[in-house]
Length: 427
Image (tube, rainbow, N blue to C red; front, side):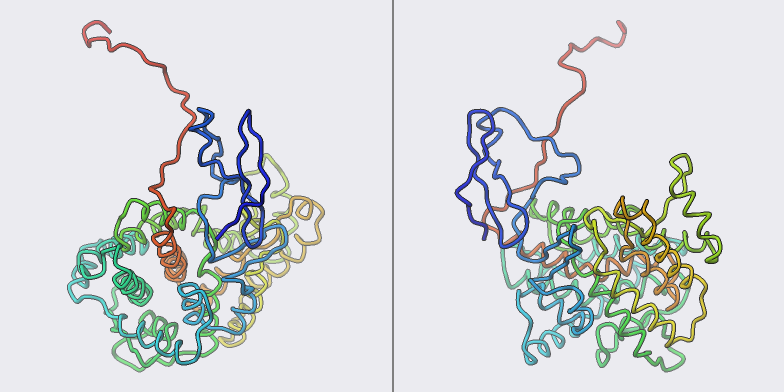
């Protein structure tokens, strides 16, 4: 819980208490500001507003720090597993071996979808974007699982949380299979969470699918790196939807819809398309010059971040993972060499250093996913799959917060003042 620092900030004639968390900037508690002053604060994008209290994830963008429950993301990505990180985010502590085994067993028993949902998929056009399918199917889960929609019941919230985490790989894999006209594969609970997803995505009923350990580990890392990222747009959407009392499936569907936006979840696809446009390392100087030209619409994608003003700590792990995947699959892709050279040039260029445009996680993730065999339309789906655990953990935390209220941002109104209605014949 946050504490008052004993300090106050004087605004007009009133003093407002300053609160501090365990780490990070202090905040000014302005909950009574409107009642006492008759004014609102103005903060488009909420970039200077703490919308909630949370103990899940901490980001220091200036120092390039990302912590889940206090653990650095690099340590988790290198030494942990996605299931272990999921348990950590949901429960606050790393599990014992018995606790992890029980959690994995529980998740594996929720991987199947209600059989009628297969018919639901067939209602979409064959060329439907997989994210459109994800939004619809996840939102529809509340129509099939009535026993886990009572948000006032902690047991039902737990069941809903486990179901969402467990079923998301099945939903995502079925969206992919439907888009390419292949039959759905049922989950295989003898495999790991990530291995099962790879098999459901790339396997076929006619032959045995062998999970490549290097690809499985790479995907598990990608899931870990995308598991949660504080109060970003989609997470805030989940919390806002949840604040109204909406069921958890509807809240996660809302998060998926927000994530679909190219400024949020679609950035890795944009970065991959940029690398394809550049083509080869010898063309990089030309595109660097274009990026610096304010009159040229070209922008370097995968560089810079809304929060990070230093090297994205997730990008460090991702760069290493690219090399491991390429070596395991014997991939000779000029895109990776172009990416490495572009990163090297940009990091030594005064223009990018001054503007703090460092590579972010999206710079490499698209290259990895493409090498594994995912089409670009699936990139944001994979992001949603991984981020579901963060959304669920944030939703649970919000529901349990005694200070939680329905979200209701205010506005600075600039429209017409009151005027009288003029009948149609007199206009």
